[in-house]
Image (cartoon, rainbow, N blue to C red; front, side, top):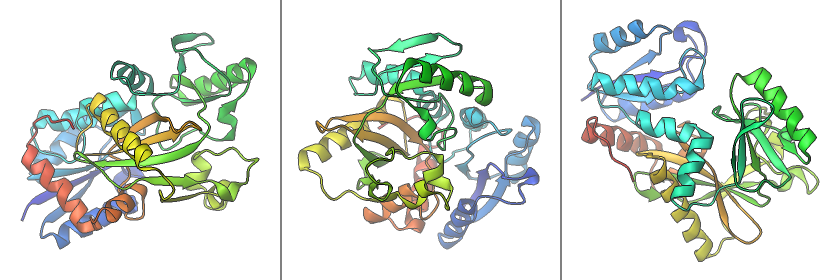
Length: 327
């Protein structure tokens, strides 16, 4: 039996309302014969370190997605765990930082010859960095935020003036740099990667939106259950796909994880154009582990029920013991 600290970002001060995934992971750990200790990340670094040391865990199940309300700090929490020398599940601080920076990760894709949408980065009215020859329409979003923050139909721009207006709005409201990237029309595929294995592919079915609606998974489609975007989209197992395209997607997903130094588990979001060419939109290290979420669903299709999946992630962390390994 291991003493497992379940580290998570609280929804409310003091962690009175943890995300449902915290309870699901804790229950799975109990079924595996371990002793879970849920621990919300405090706002102060000293309290975080003291709390972990007081708990004296054998291993940490890292569900932390932010610190002090800032998702960009996720990698720094992992770095602190590395300094403490306690094994923890999921990705290293390096992998979280590289994958979390959407512009830097594209530079890595370029080096590794992985296809990605051409892009520009803005911290002001003029681009600081341009990667490729930009063609409209484009998609404009915060550079480092996750969970589709500030992403919706308004992110889709057809002209320079529309792009300029959206960039200006995001710079003012998100306190983040802004990424404008070429919109890839086509299929949206989720490739879940567990260790060195690409799990069965999932695809977003946009047919419920109709032909005139923009086919994207924005924030409304993911979280706003009463919205037409949520009701009109469904994530399903990929069915209609050639063996050749499946191999290309799996290879692309695995190489994208390697490029970003991502280990253990991740979800790679890919768009496939009309020529069956896969483009990496982003790598999501430590994806949401809710039992009905995309990663857990893909794992079930591969034969991993939820409790064994949690056990595999824990065993990997224990065996790794703080050492670095990439796919």
